[in-house]
Structure formats: structure tokens, C-alpha cells
Length: 446
Image (tube, rainbow, N blue to C red; front, side, top):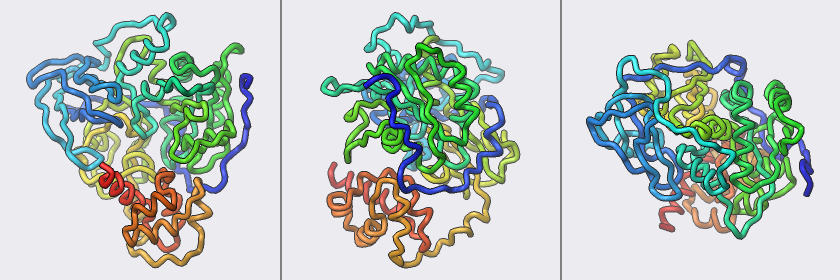
């Protein structure tokens, strides 16, 4: 396979076209938020084992200093988002629901936004293994929402051969424009991060998939690429959920990841543009991940935009900064399709959170709470991007036949995009049923 021998399909079959609501933030430059007086830093902000504290109450730390180390390979360290004093380490609520052990950091009044901890690395002299270790030391996890440790993604099992790095710049969720702004404002860091990821993963070419509603980002990246760069930009059709990594692999390369499989099984490594831009920014300076870009939007937000937010900043403080003083009743972390609702404004921003969306109260009446019986219209079947039968799965879920859902109807291939719930005329919360079924099956298997 030569460089750039891509399939160049425009899209996948099925999916939906919800209103994107991106206009109010897509053209606004990224702005920085101040430090909150007190920050809550969960030790579990990623898929895998929680980090282990390196600090104690009363200890002073510098902005960027490691405050928790990785607990093994499937884990990521955590760094101080601000210069300040460690007040406590205790259980605190998070967006996921259960309380987790968290570091409470009181920021020093007037603390500088400069990163005060780090050591420059000569990235060009590092081996692939050293690059992977350096990526882990940054504490980098997938910033697209999954929170999977990035160094693990870049480590390909020796029995598999990979040739292509797929860079996900689709950002198909309504409202979210963090990746769009990063591609425009941090183009050089993104390209540097892609080059690092190519070397670390052993892939020899990269393709950046970007939806065609972001022509300025496509042009900005193409202008910065050098002729010798094994990197191509491919425009794909705007459709939800185009940003699913398995769907994007099929669209760009014509390869299908097997049921229950992972991208490396078809020779591919996938990373989000925001993740790679941060690698390109942090790694040469030897710094850790202490802040991220978050889209803050919605009709109730007076100052919508994309903000650079220190990790651990409580939602209440963020919303006050952008002019929202309501409760958490219509607050979504992430995008409205795959994000999660929040019960408290005291939970903090963590590494995987890309959006903070305040929906209007009237939106609750657009889809009444009342659920009607399935009319077997097949609309959900036509929408499902992985060609499952959500109607049948929903009927099985109602009878709590969760194992049958997994064994006979491929429940685990569902990545919870929410297309089925969105189109259902009976207002059946199908994706919520599927999440419950998966959770019960995992508990039974444990």
C-alpha cells in the first residue's frame, strides 16, 4: 500500500442529521478562564486504574507539577492545574455519579498562568518506546470524550502490524467546536503531534478526516503541510456520528473493524485532533496536561465560546464566568447526543470533557417524558450506523434479557451514539436501556 491510497468515500450508511447549533462558537477564538479559588482533581479521569497521590494535605505545589503517578501501564499521571496548596484528599462527586478519591487544591491568589514545572525534551532523538513513555508522562488521554490513555493507543501489540494513523477531526456532535478551533489556532502543534504519533506507533502515513462543514480547518492544515509529510487531509460528509472511529476507518480506508475488535486489527491507530495537538505542544516542553479546551454553549449562556479551562475547575465557577446562574437541570457534559446530564454544579471539569452545554427549559417539552409502545416503524433500524436492530434490542431490554441482547443481537457493537433514541417516534429511551444492559452484563461477568 503506497502513501495516500485511500478509499475516499464520503460517508457511511445510515446515521442522522441533527441541527448542529455550532454557529455561536465556531468563529470565536479560544479564550482562557481564570483559576477557581478551589479545584477538585479526581484521581480517576481516564479509562483504567486511578492515579496514586504523590502529595499530602498542606503541601504546596507548582502549576504543572505531578500530583499523582500512574498506577501501571493502563493509567495516567495527573499534574497540578495551578500553583497552590493541597487542602485535602477525599471522596468527591464526579460527573460519572459515584464519588471518587480527589485532590482538593486551593489556588494561590494571583497565581500565574505560566507553567512552572517541566523539562524540555529533544523529541527527535527519542525512540518509539521512549516517545510512548514520554506521552504517558504528560498524563495525556483521549480528549475526544473516551478518556482512553493515549500511550496505550500508541502501543501496538507485537503480533499486529499497523500502517496508517487516522486522525479524527470530524467533531460531529451538535454544539461542540473545540476541535474546529484547535485545528485553526493550533495547526502547527497538531502537525507536530501527528509526526510524533507516527513515530511512536510505527505507522508510516496519516490521514486527517474532517467533515465538510469545516472548510477553513481543512484549508489551514493543508497550507501547513510540507510536500514530504506523509500526511493527507480528507474531507468527509457532515453526518452524525461520522466521528466514530470505526465508521471513520471504513469511510477513509475501506477497512472494517471486526465485531468486538480494535483498530489495530485492521492496521490502524486512531487519535483525536485535540489529543495530538496537545501532544505536539506538551511533549517538546516536557509538561503535563493541566488544561483543555471546552465548548460552553446553549441559549442560556450569555458568553458562549471555546474556553481553555484548568482541569479540576468546578462547573459552578465556569458557568458564573460565562454568565449562567441557573441550576444543573438542563446541563450536559459533552455533546447532547452522547454526553451525560449533571446532577450537581460542584463536579469538576476533567480530561475527557469537551463540552458544557446548557439546554433551554423548553427543550424538555420537545420530547415529552411519556414513553409510548414501539410501533415497529423501523425508523431506528434505518438510523443505526452499525446496522443493529434497536427495536428488537429495546423489547429484550424491557424483559431484562440482557445476555440474549449481547449474544444474539450484538449489543456490544452499539457505541451508544443515540441515533435510535433521537428518531424514535414513541420516545423510547433506547440508548439508556442499552447502557443499563451493558452495565448489568459487565457486573455479571465480573
